[in-house]
Image (tube, rainbow, N blue to C red):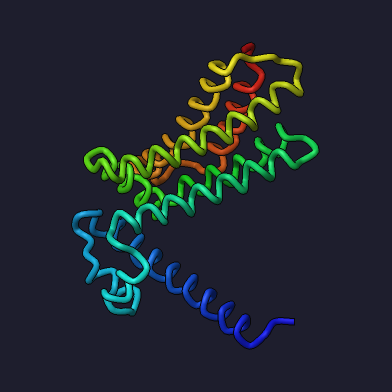
Length: 207
């Protein structure tokens, strides 16, 4: 049974988490609508419904906000890869979940935010480091997952081959961000089916 102090601490932690998420949601909206440089802390504070000083209590600057957004996306992917490897059939789990991942990537709002972050990474070394470190962690987990699938099928691939497969997977999904902007009328269901076929073919290729 929690003491009064423990209960208060839990409540305060929950409140802080909610406020951080409120700030991140407001910042994401500003970044999508105005770009990283066009979005100001004042705009973010207005949408979040709190003072700029309150935002600075949680985040040092806009780069720190981007780091938190990227960390959230990474956590989602790491959770997903862990679920794959916990499945009875890792390959089937990955291919099945790919349809949902395609839908996520083709969401215009999500695509606009991710593309804005990548664009800022191309000109801002601090944001580039954030993005690249997250990408490294993502690739590392995907390589483990792909190796499990390939090993179960009797393949003994060198690390380079596994890395190449992961790069192709990443290219498939990251390319969707551009496609949903360039061609918003694309048939998402059919694209998801083709992506699933492409992943299956990729995992079947000789090492």
